[in-house]
Length: 170
Length: 170
Image (cartoon, rainbow over all chains, first blue to last red):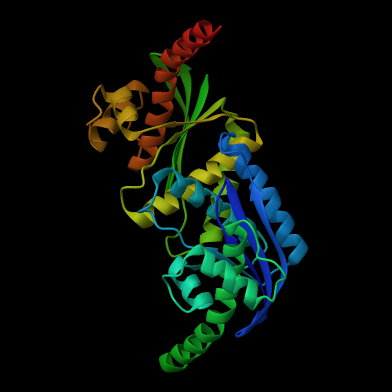
């Protein structure tokens, strides 16, 4: 399965494509889309849409995994993050690609074994899991890869639970 | 000047087109775009984008006025509202139409004279200002018209201030 992880943002939007399955993952691509924080909000979204369109067309992921953002942090960054998330939903939706959300805690736990890991630990584990020769930079890029890994590893467990739930509902 | 007011939302997105200038305003169109709250998030945004594209093409507003949402209210509704706002920014941005934000307090003050007016008072004043034979329903539609009126009435004052600021900066 191929997953595009998106760490949503407008100043920096991390993108990471990972192929794999539970317990095994390899990196296909990683990058960061940047737009100027003093730029016109509409133009920033248009640029991000074009970039996401390009990534989705080029790498044709089966799933898009996006970080779920909570509204209790910085107000302005929450809003621009939500705007970037909307563009992810829109561009993936137009291709019929499902979008799933994972919380930062879920991502940290999946990759490092603890939901309280810091950014450096996440980057270290992502580098090790994907057998990269150097750590992905900036942190948003590593986070996007971590999201994709999280989805692959949780996906297997979730699929089993879904199957059990469906069997139980019958 | 023609303004499209947008009361952003996914379950209900109010849209109101108003022609006018400071102190005078007439309604061109009003409506509400609805998407099912249990619908796929991507599909809801795609539907809203299509509707907004249609309104922008049909009514060719010079400005889009959107309600500025704060992150301190209900978390889920803030997120879906932010997603709808992103679609407004995206669709207007692609046509080079500027998007301006007004807070609920600014809108209420512009239309009723007090920033603490309730929804009923806003609807009553919108109906009176636009000389409508019946009150626009639902409240989201009235709010969208109120946003457009607010922009027209504040716009004149803001334009004067901008001109003064530019003259002062020289």
